[in-house]
Length: 339
Image 1: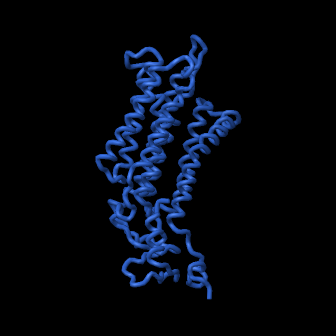
Image 2 (image 1 turned 90 degrees about the vertical axis):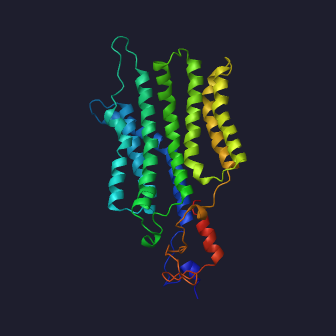
Image 3 (image 1 turned 135 degrees about the horizontal axis):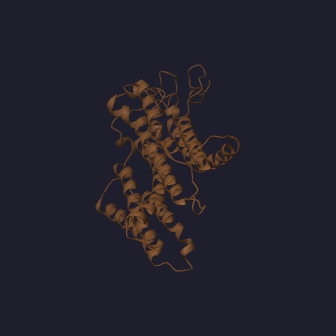
């Protein structure tokens, strides 16, 4: 007789991929978009500027357009099967997806100063920063629309979604939001530098860079803490270590810029990013994370093969597809829902 775990038990039905494996793959796809989309958008911008003639559109504006289309479209493709597409969610998705395109609509093309013939680099730096902020804000908004909004307003239960759609754990949502923090912090760097140069008494580049490192480091630490604070078992020791590493994120790049030498000045651009990466890695290392099942108040077992809800059953054999597992197999599958 065929193994029900391989055949699905009910007439040779092929079992669905377990949810935790599905989320893991999609998370990797989402991370892979970070280097792929800018590179593809850059090539697309060059081709569009060369072969498509539209007034006021140059390579920079084409890049923003290609980037926004690819980022929004591919992200929807990656996560679409884990979203319950109600009418309200479809409309909200369409609405918040306009955010990355604001920079395309409002931005003016790079212009040439009539007096000197030089490119106004300052404007393009600001536009790049604004574009990055828009991309990061879109990621945060889309996480709320897909897995936060209806959860609290529509009270949709898992029984209404036997295939596992819409069941993304709190840890998984935080991981996707963390991806959105990358463009936000990167976008703050050029915008912050221009604002410090325009509206503060700081005049020399090193002083602006040191101040910018401190401000961006504070913002990066606060964003990271806001995203993950609910997933951590906080204690005095954990809080003290967190504050210590946050101080390192802020102070070390700032002091290095302040104490720069001619031999190290050309390498300093990498210091804030290294500090940011070490801060994130350190928090992963020493933060005690809450259990996924304990974190979710509506946790309930479902069939690993087909996603059918098993709540209230006296046996672990799925009445839908015939797949049968042990209690510990079901527990391990659902406790590892994020990865």
